[in-house]
Figure 1 (cartoon, rainbow, N blue to C red):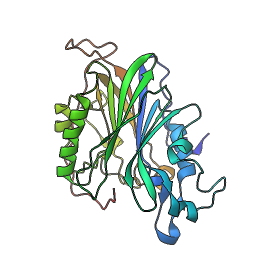
Figure 2 (figure 1 turned 180 degrees about the vertical axis):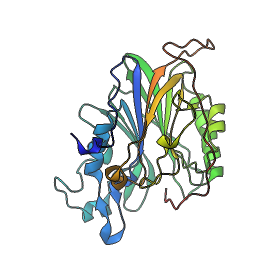
Figure 3 (figure 1 turned 120 degrees about the vertical axis):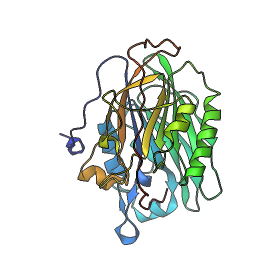
Length: 296
């Protein structure tokens, strides 16, 4: 058995019409500081494959980084010659990547790894100030013969910035076909659980299983002892049937975040409450206290 599945990661559904989506902030593929800094990108590759998701939405993905490339030798267990998005993609997956932030040493941004064919890749800048470069990665996906729109996001560190970024997300969504299923996923940095209402105003519902409100199963940060549900999936015309967050020492080692995995069924795009396969969904979470330190 793959040791990354020791946390009882459930297999993907074999039912037709089930879409599995994962979102994961990979912390640029490294952990630690100074002499204790270690490379986790190879473990992350195994982890992403174990998620067995149709769509994998990634944040803090290195396109390149000169300093880390010098630090870690380019061996089979060292710094990959490929970009991290290409390196992490399971065999047969399509890859979409766009840079959000450019630094002296390199670039990083959001990525989408898709089991299904993708269309033209788009990027929409939602940076709120010069100290934080943020963007939306937009990718149309052909899933089981139907079109699904996917957006990968990574919001800012202040609540005011996040509210303005949701407003820009809403403006971007207005350009899309309102009849198509839409997945919006990523690291919201929403410590205080205050974004669900403005996201609902965009027509987006948070991924919540039918059993009730979000529980501790969806807490993703910090990975060692998660108390915040920063990593979210919001959708339109999709009903959430299950959510899962893999945990354990192996997952806690690879990033400061844990991945969130959810499965969906398509529901009707009209006002008719009868879905194609299931009914409406939604939910909210209780408020939490102040956040621990987080760089991005």
